[in-house]
Image 1 (cartoon, helix red, strand yellow):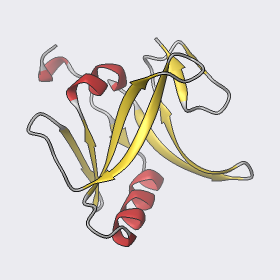
Image 2: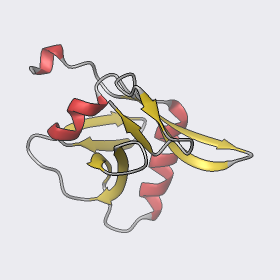
Image 3: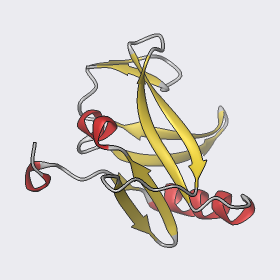
Image 4: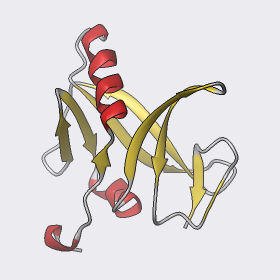
Length: 113
């Protein structure tokens, strides 16, 4: 898959605002790393880590002072996704609207393709 064929991962305004806020309070962290791992009730799960380390082949997404890193393996599962931050009666959480997912669990942290 070439970079020109890759549909970008985007950040909503609320996600960018929350990431910027979290990074400002996290000593030594420069970015939020989003990755996809095997596991979870639907087959794959999203993982979020604060990091200062960037790999040469990471996709770097920057918006309004927020920085997100996604490795190339995870990017294959996240093409075209929108990273959002939701604050509602159920609580606060990052949510990924992933057009590649054919099913997801009720909590929204795992999915299948």
